Length: 450
Image (tube, rainbow, N blue to C red; front, side):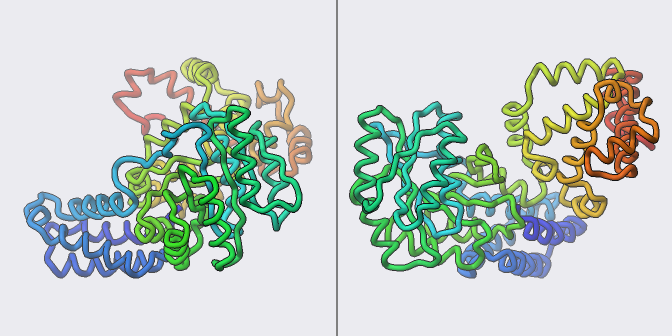
């Protein structure tokens, strides 16, 4: 997420931090590089101009000139401008203050991930807000879209409205609303049809549905990798239909991130959610400040802690902590830690939330340190017997060959896994030897191998 933009902006700031004082020339040169970075990240030109203007006004002010660390002050100014551009300090929540069933309509172009996002939002409302939700597909042109929503509904245990053939989107929306009222649902999610491009028929269809059911929220779902077209898509939907918020899908891809800025500022409505993965629980409420922190490589510890509290069982954590304190750490423990990390979104997702990780990301990529290699490790551990997991010393050449064959890996991969376990085990023994007081004195470096 925002990898390209983050890398370029941090390159600019590294130069500024090295200077004791900043002249007007230094600030202008930095702003020029920031403008180029934003344009290369597919941010629309009018948005870049507005952003640069806001930063320049503050960066040339007395607060920077008198600052003890002017380079850091410019970073703060850009950070604050990013937060403002992305929607401000407070997250924009869904407006559910209406008589049930509250109608939420999803609109957008075909291929933006609208149907999947509809199911993710239903799961979010069911699990996080404790709401009874029903979904309805209004796509009468594509039976596959209706079937997809039904299948996703079964996966997340959310009801979907059955669709009869030959009905118009307006008829379906009215009937779905009537059934939602009769059966006492809290929320009705309407998944509208999309097109490969913006046309009058699409806009007319969506506008008519909106007129029939008067939704409390009309959310535009857009692919984060839309690029320069993002601003135009947001503008047309806002003018033709009127949207109350944005959901950006596929934010976990190699997105340049420009869509987030462009759509937010052009449409003039907040980003309410972002899709950060393919799984049904990978929809996050959008927090502008947290995203700005990630872009500037300041980390996102708040989201990291939230993910940990939701994904990791307290009992399992205590069990592993106790074994660590005792200096015990076998391959079963290693597998448990890997599985917990995967529940939190995987290695790449977690790395993106750690401060300063952007600077070593390329080195980790070159070393093959990714989610795929971690899944391979799990496969190898699962190919072992319980006795082998508890006592890795038993793993001789023939056992290693069996494990490699069973997991589809090589003997060298098995040896690499055992070396990693050994390094981790050494760390655990040092943890026991140092104790909590010693750890406080020496810090994490006291545990690291030389």
